[in-house]
Image 1 (cartoon, rainbow, N blue to C red):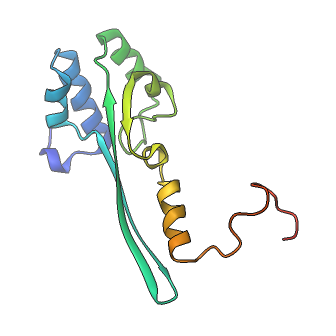
Image 2 (image 1 turned 90 degrees about the vertical axis):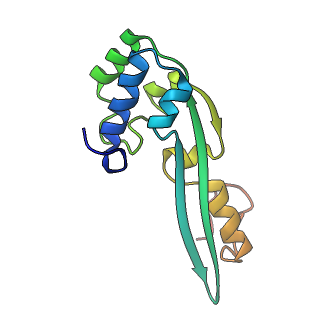
Image 3 (image 1 turned 180 degrees about the vertical axis):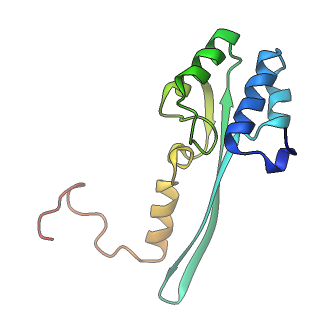
Length: 136
């Protein structure tokens, strides 16, 4: 296996699963597998801008070998940035999520919205009723 910093998401996930299978503690797995998700972005509006990095921590419970084997066999982890989908089957393994739930899925929506509002980039937000598209 390649050096840790050069691993693909799938290789990191496989390494974490391998460590759990060998009955290492969650803390030992964390030392080898990144369990945080960070999204960084910059928004410019007019002459103002906001830079932000949003980090979300995810804790996964200890899994039995049969659970790991079944999860690997299902293939859900393929193509996922962290090797799992919090909104999918792997959600059953997550015991704690600290931070933005939507950040783990893809984009920290609440933080992004707050930054857009701070820049006064959404003059018509919110509409009188969320989801109302009348008058467009």
